[in-house]
Length: 303
Image (cartoon, rainbow, N blue to C red; front, top):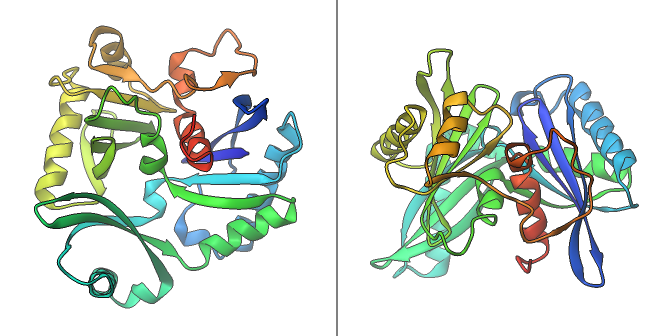
């Protein structure tokens, strides 16, 4: 199994094999794209060629032949949001409501996207459902590129969902912070279940601007307050797991001084065979959180 995750122009990937039924991370690697991918350029021929070239690069880097691939897409590629659904409604009525809400939110653009629904936690007769709007033409492009180089794309996931599988069972509630390309994504979870997420850009003065939120405006402001406190080197007592490819120095210092802030350690449950160079430390390994997470998902969370 090959796991691939995208961070702006950066792509990280890893290969999992089985050795006597023991999951082993055999190798990890990274590469840089010529251009930062976006939903807007999916239909361009250059995009399709670069996808194929990327998959070819990954294939040539593997230690062992492999055909299975799982992809993790960044949240700024996809529109997603959370809703509360009345569980007293019949299942067909729940789906009808979710699809109606989807059309209301996306308007005339709704025909260009396919909704995927992810049921989450339940409380007081309502279930939280995450709706992800997947561009209709994105999946065929990725699968066709895989077919060209003899990869079978088994799954395509959203980054917060794959990363949550790395959280230890001993920490049921907290938040994730992903840093990449002047962008920060913060996700909260309870009982290791997704609650909400927001994406922010950050400038040189550490000022935050919200790009997108999965929930209400008030929920987004709460997430922004948590993130602002972190950037000011205050954790507020909440367990925080950090990862990414462009961590601010203030966050790195906080991880060294605050017991509530730590790097995700994605390989703890795996046997690891790849050689760790002198530059590979816990911060470097943390960038592979989504790779390890999507491999866990493919293994049925059995590791």
